[in-house]
Image (tube, rainbow, N blue to C red):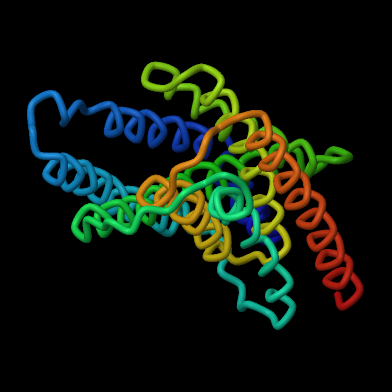
Amino acid sequence: MDATNENIQGKGVARIFWLFLYFLCLYLAVNAIPFSRFIPSEHLCLGLSLLAKTLLLGYAVWECFRPRNRALFSFHKLRRNSLLWLPLILPCLSNVLYAACFSGSFFPALDAGKAALAFADDFIVAILEEILFRGILFIFFITLFQNKKNGVVYSILLSSIAFGAIHLVNIFSNPPLAVLAQVGYSFLLGVVLSLVYLGSENFVLPVLGHFLFNALNDTVPSMFLSYSMDTAYYIWNAVLGVFALLYAVGIAIVMRRRKTHVS
């Protein structure tokens, strides 16, 4: 991650920020396309939305992995201690566990086509959002604050605040309380994924973590589970969120200290 900062420095920090804004606007525009207004088929709407996001992903990968931007992304070889991140799968299962432990109910009906499209969408969205918020914005702040005390902390918090705030766009289609909850856990997710990236220095891990969270905590419950989002539900998710945050902070600190000791 330090080498990445040095490579970016000579290319202009401002250009990295404009790159983030450019792709953020494109991403929001793609998500705003009202396919359902004109197309009655739910499967076709999902397919067209997935196609649009896939095309945007292809463009983002082409642009972000060009030689002048390639230093934004780190793909260090995974070490054996990367297995320490595995317990973070637990918060990804929070809704499934809540339904199983409390008053949720399961329904076995499965639309295989819709499920495949939904999981594919989760995967594409995970890559796009990680490119935006961990691959570009987080590294932008890391570089901007590299000479300041606690610069890494500022970088994690600011990029995660931006990641949480972007979910406010859902206020137009969801209840306000549900959107505020989404903003809150998206902020926590952003912090955890930033710590995972910082500790592992491998961009694949936050992408994988983001995908698992979306798939296991959103897509699977929406297709197979029914439960009430009452006070107990929010407390349950808050407890698991705090666990994930504290655990990720601890593992990231341990990994950074070991790296410093080895160096």
